[in-house]
Image (cartoon, rainbow, N blue to C red; front, top):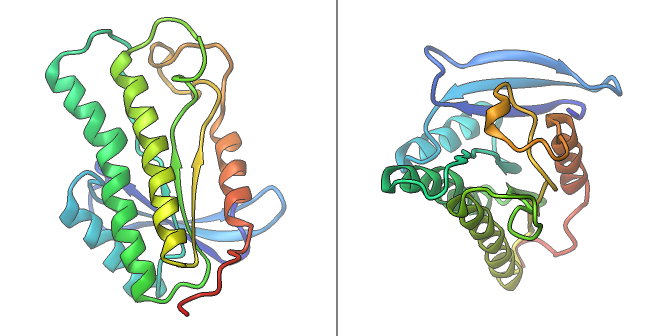
Amino acid sequence: MVDLGMKVVGVSRKLIGTPQRKEVTSEEGHTGEMVFVQGDVTYPPDVEKILNWTRKEFGRTDVLVNAAGWFHNINPCDPATLMKLYVTNVAASFLFSRAAVWEMMANRTTNGHIITISSLVGKQDIGPISVACIATHESVRQLTEKLNAEVRESLLPITVTNIKPPHWFVTTKPEDYIPIRQVTAEDIAKEICNAVSIDHPIMPYL
């Protein structure tokens, strides 16, 4: 899951104190470093802070994975819940993706990748779930498509990919998902690795 020498920065709102570092070894024997930093991906100053910290620590950002998401299984949901769903599932991906594009341009990244994670819940009949949740997943998919079109039109060496798991992730709280077919974190990690393993075909910064 972690390629040789890869540095991965994870963001957590709950982390207290200085960044926490952990050595990681993949099934293939590759080693890398995982660093957890404190931040709120829905708060623009924190987004800038995280990207600035990554630049100072590792030199640049090559890959962004928008993995923040929240699910609510009550239909309909109240206005406060609707806002939390939208801000976490959609706005955070927009804010971080926009900031990452500018960061990659500033550092002249030659093979950048931006990845969003949504779901196929809006495309398949999998039973009663929150309409608001479906709407946020579809918004992320469309956001990814439009961003991909923009970076291609600008001839930027950045690939934008949307990963759509067929069903729900495995979580520690069974009530948080409908158990039609379990999708593990390892499944998603493999899809991410496949997405970032392809070199960008566009010549950088003509």
